Image 1 (cartoon, one colour):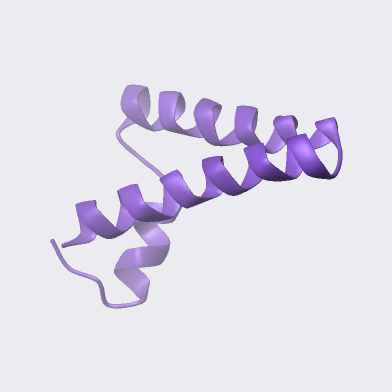
Image 2 (cartoon, helix red, strand yellow):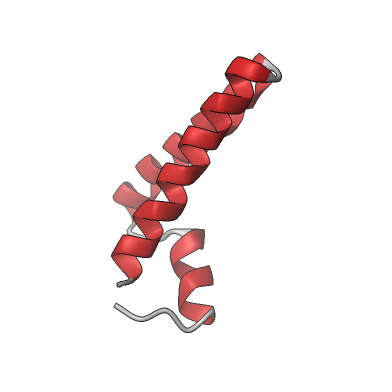
Length: 61
């Protein structure tokens, strides 16, 4: 369950930031880069802030 919610949130962040970059301002691509960098960092360290937030909200595996 948590994995599905995590993927939905991250996918939404990426798609919304891309839409904002196209229709509002290209600087929104920095947010897309941040999300990608966070995914890379979490794959290397096995820790992600969003994971911790979801656990505190009561979302279980």
